[in-house]
Amino acid sequence: MSARRLIVLVLTLAGMALTGSLGRWQLARAAEKQAMQAAEQAAERLPDADVGALLAASSPAQAAALMHRSIALRGRWLAERTVYLENRVMDQKAGFYVLTPLQLDAQGSVVLVARGWAPRNFDDRRVLPPVQTPASEVELRGRLVDHVPSFFALGAESPGPIRQNIDLQAYARESGLPLAALMVQQDGPPSDGLTRDWPSPTSGADKNFSYAFQWFSLCALMGGLFLWFQVVRPFRSTRRGRSGR
Image (cartoon, rainbow, N blue to C red; front, top):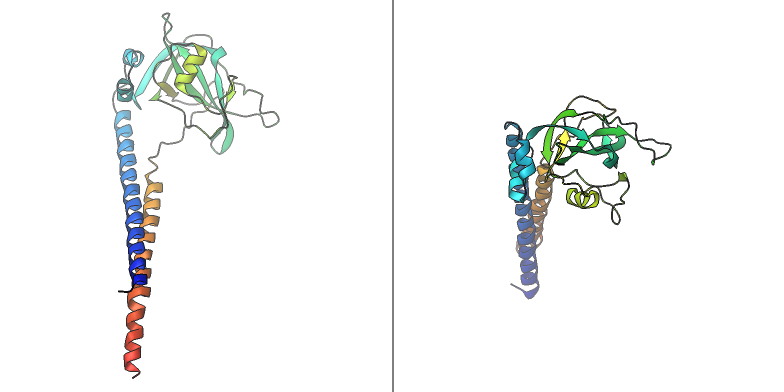
């Protein structure tokens, strides 16, 4: 074998090894995401989480044990602490996710609640949507989550009511509120000027399967090209040369 063909062989094998390993990594990521989605669905079928357990959760492990479970809350809104996350879409319309802390008891226990979605004012983005926040005690149900899906943002978030994203721990430090380790995504029919047609959670594994297919296809293409140009064509040329004698 000539030095040139040896170099081509080494480069082809290295490329196939790399693309094949990337394809396997994407399959592993897809399996992880599917397992996480299965765990979320299993948690949603469990009985309601205990409010005391939510308030007592102080470690990541304790919080993770409550993730995605349903919970019933009773308390009073801290309306002045409401945050509006802009550029959120529901039913193909642009608007805000509205988040308000809910004080559960006289001891000051507080849970941040994603109450729902409200449309934006297209004439002036600084105008807040007309959301009603009752001053009396309210009861609600929802699902425990650790964050609201975030969007790319330049720089730190402003402390005002309209924001791009919110981090639960950062908001707790900023507000000084004794927030629970998890927040609640409120369920139920429209109320208070808010709708709650939340996007269905998906694993995102389809994207990883797509990437895996692309990497494996590239791996096969490399192998096919090597066989064609380094094996099949030289072999056919040799045969034609012999038959022409």
